Amino acid sequence: MSLFRERGRWSNIVALLLVGAGVFLYLWMSYRTYRIGFPLDDAWIHQTYARNLAKIGEWAFVPGQPSAGSTAPLWSLLLALGHFLSSGIPYTWTFSLGVCSLIGLMILGQRWFERETGVFFPFAAIFLGLEWHLLWAALSGMETAFMACLVLAVLWLVGESRSRWGWMGILIGGGIWVRPDAITLIAPVFLMWLWRFSRGETCWRDAVKFLTGFLLLFTLYMGFNLLLSGSIFPNTFYAKQAEYAVLYERPLLLRFLRSFGVMLVGGSGLLLPGFLWGIYQAWKNKNVAFLLASVWVLGYVALYALRLPVTYQHGRYLMPAMPVYFVLGLIGTAQVVRSLNQSRWGWVLSRVWLGSMLGVTLGFVLLGAQAYATDVAIIESEMVETAYWLAANTPPNALIAVHDIGAVGYFAQRRLVDLAGLVSPEVIPFIRDESRLRAYLDQQQVDYLVTFPGWYQYLAEGKPLVYQSRGKFSPRAGGENMCVYRWR
Image (cartoon, rainbow, N blue to C red; front, side, top):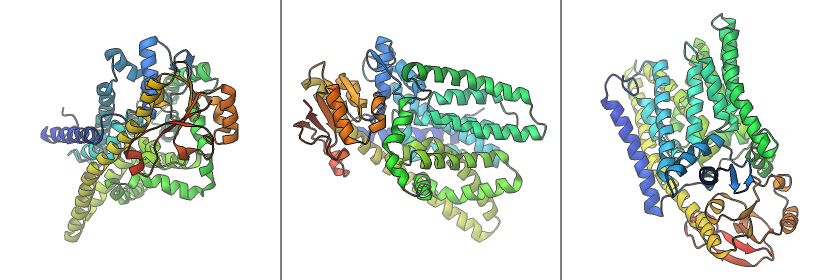
């Protein structure tokens, strides 16, 4: 049996080669622009937890201070294996995990596409493998692609004629260890069970199988966080919402449209007609699995629009839902193309549509590689270089207040006060109140403050500047250079 169940191996080989070329292009562009690294400072948070677990056997960001600052404990645990195998930064291991997640997305997406359309050429696999958001996510050092793979697996299983209820419970329970929002997948699973129960196609035993798998892992997750932080979710779950609470002032509909809009950047924008057509056909034909997946995507976007309406970093918080939208859009597009092919002008229109989608998708592979390289260069020239300076120019026992703790925690290895509240949850209640932050930093007897000047209006006012990075990429992108201030 071939990888994507296609009647012929060459198309599968071509699909994998195209993805390999995309991965190579992203990493080569990063190396050529500045150097290899990660496009997010948060990736270094996971690496720090992973290194400390592997080297000293502690679940801590700062050695000796256990904390719940990792949103994705399972991802950090997987990264720890790389630190067992390597004495340096395990880039190869980290990127391999992301690429394996991307290949998993390709396989699952193609299986779903085949089930709904009967088309065995790996259209879905190729699209998912070359979609620029997913390439970025796979090489970000973050759990995003892994989480997306778990999401797609659950929703694919929901539509299987013989649903594996126990496995769905395990996948959702395990998914919460990757990102807490995996808990939203309970809704489509429960509704599918209810639908099939009403038709006599399932029974209470299946519900017990699901709940057993889910509750076992979810209970362990709650206990893990309660032990570390006193709450059932990690600190990041609360800190991010508090930091961006000001965005709640925008109308909810606008927040939803802006959030959903990030999914449409690239060839995926041309999938929107197919996505809408697929929903119509699913309603007409009572394709419950398709409808539930569609509602989950829209509900996931609405949830973020309601609680965390941010679209920066290419919509990374919404990336776990993107492959579901892509697959549903591809299925609907295949249905539309099949209808259009019945007339000459329809055939021409469908080829223009598909050709445009191919051209835009390939164009965004290059644009995405450039964006990825720039993102990596900004993190490396600002956060990482500043962390190197702190390691070389501050006392080993210095206490440093910093907003983005990832690279500083990994490379500087100093005591930290986290202004974003991930490992210092006590700051969350006044995370945007600069007067209280100043008083808190004084109370903690902080030695240095590390921040971009524009992030706070007057927090660093009157404090002597002792270091400013000389990176060129952040100013070119409209940002600033990272600064270190002497606090006392």
